[in-house]
Every structure is written in C-alpha cells, then in structure tokens.
Image 1 (cartoon, rainbow, N blue to C red):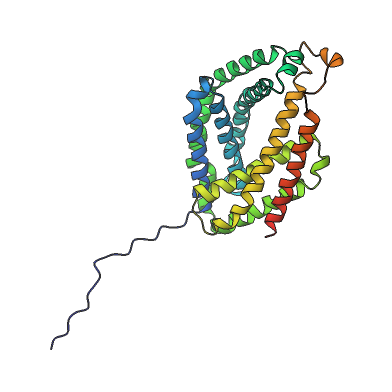
Image 2 (cartoon, helix red, strand yellow):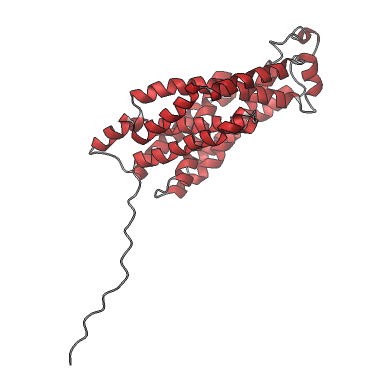
Length: 300
C-alpha cells in the first residue's frame, strides 16, 4: 500500500519583526515631537494658550529624547539646532508664563490682591508676549528650524556614525541602564529638597519632567521588552514634576508685583498673595512626599 506523502502546511510563518534598535526608537519618539509642533502651530499663532503649552511640551520631549540617547545622537548639527530651539523656546516660555500668571490673577482668591498690586500690567504684558510669539512662530527662521529638525532626525550625521558601529547596544539593555541612572540621579538631587533654592528646584523639576516623558515614550510609543517594570515609577515622577511646577508658578505670581507700577503698594499692603506661605508649604510637603515615593518605588 502506497504511503501518503506528508502534508505540507499551506500557511507560511509570518516573518518575525526585528526588535527596534536605539536609533529607530529615537527617531520614532523625536519625529512624534516634530509632528506635535506642526499640529499645534496654527492654533498657537491664533493665540490658543493650550496650543502654546503643547508646543512647549513637544520641545521638552524632544530635548529629553536627545538627552536620553545622547551617546548615540548628539553631533555638531544637533548643537546648532539646540541654539535655534532655545531661541524659539524663549518666546514660547514668556507667553506661557504670562498665561499662567494671568490665570492666577483671575482666580477669586487672588483677584483683589492682583488688581491692587499689579493692576493692568499683566494683561498688557500677556498681549506683548503673545504678539512676539506669533511673529516668532510665523517667521522663516522657525519654519526652517522645523524642517531642519525633521531632516536631522531622519538622516543626520549621527545616524551614519551609528550604523558604522559594530558594538551597538540592544534597546532593552540601553533603556534599562539609562532609566536606572536617571532615577538614581533624581533621588540624589532631591535628597535635600526642603532646603533647595529656587534655581536648584527648577533644575530638579526639569529632570523629573524628562524622566517622566521618557518613561511615557518608552512604555507607550516604543514597543520593547520589559516595559511594564517601569510603570510604577511614572506616577511619583509625574507628581514630583507637577507639584514643583505649581510651586514655581505660585512664586512667579507672587513675584510679579515687584516690577509693576503698583510696586510701591507692597510697602503699604500685603507683600504676598493671600494664603501664599501656607500654600507654598503645602506644595513643598507634597513635593517631598512625591520624592520619597519615587525613591521607594525604585527599591521595589
């Protein structure tokens, strides 16, 4: 009796997608940032405060990605782009800061103090800052910067240098090492948070923001192994960044009376907004608690 030939499966195994390397991961994250800048550009030019904020977030995310993959991507072209980004971010930051201070001044709790101590200066300053920003956003310089950023991300000199490397590290091990290093740095820099001055608190906030953004990018944008083990660090990092940001905004609002025509009222009236010291202490305590949670989360 003749034997039947063995059946061969008609289904072919789907090719296994190659795991992304560090260069591919950086490109994906960075190009998403450029896309966000483009998406909010028109609304920001129309005076939309949220669009201005989102462009700033996109720029900060891009800077965080470059810092995270610095050993791979930083080259002479990036150093030139960084100066142009700082120029653009200066106008964005001034407009955003004006929006925040005006928002504080309109709160019921601070309205009377703001009118007495600052007057109409805030609205005038906000208008000037947004006009300056619109001119900046609509300029040829900004348009060239956006195009140059995308080109550098896709095919900058760093990419050719990376391709020539034979000892390129796998994405998973690279990310684990860098996230550990960033986490340890955050814990170390925030040890004496209660006594840190404003400038050092600001630098700590930026580091917390970069750490948070990279956790989000690597766990939501890039699919790489072992991503779940970092999720427990995201919440305390985000809380630390936000509380320090709220503290900075409150201090900026309190200090906005110093340069106003009504500054002489400080001698006759309340120097700080109502409840300022109590609110500041509350925020500082919340920041210390967030830093403690971040430290303990890393030890799990």
